[in-house]
Image 1 (cartoon, rainbow, N blue to C red):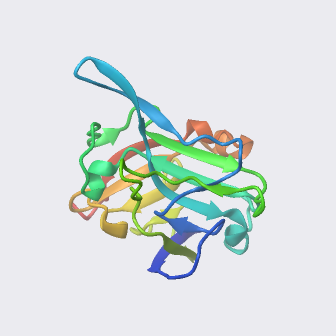
Image 2 (image 1 turned 90 degrees about the horizontal axis):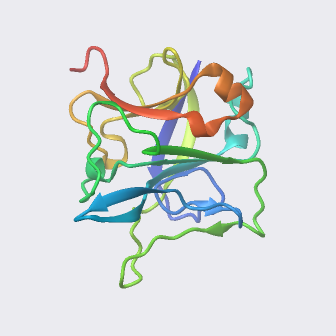
Length: 203
C-alpha cells in the first residue's frame, strides 16, 4: 500500500511537524539547497522551493514494511516555482528533470531545542513562502491518482498531482520523485530524481 497525503489549513504552529509549504525546520548543520542559474552572463545561486517536511514518526503505522524511516525528518525541495504561479529562471517541462532540480534531505533525529526555522525573505524582509498546511496521512492503493508517498513502478518516493496546494502541472499532470529500491534501503536520498508526466487516463 501507498500513503496518501492530506493537506489542511491551520492556525496551529507547525514547528518540527509534518507540513506542506511554510519554512523548513532545520538542524544547525543543514544548509538550504540551491542550484546555479546563469542569466545575462552571470551565475548565481537560486533557492529551490521548499515543498514539505515529514515527521517520519507519522508514517510508522502506515508503513509496516519499514520502507521509509520511522524517526527523524524528511525534507523535499524542487524547482517548481513556475508551477506555483511565480516567475522563475528555471522552466522544467515534461520528462526527467536535471540533477539538482529536486532535492530530498533527511535528518535522523528531531530536536526542538536546536532546530531552527529557515526562512526566506525578500528585500523588505517579507516572507517568500506560502502559509504552511498541516499534513496528515492515510493508506491508499499503490496506483492511486492522488498525492502520495510510495507506490508506482519502478518506484516512487513522492507523487504530487496537479491541483495539490495550488500547483498546476496541466490537466492530468503529475510530478514524480523516483528512487531505486536499493538506494532507499541505504538512505541515499541524494539519488531521488524528478520527472513530470501525465497520469494514464487523465490526459
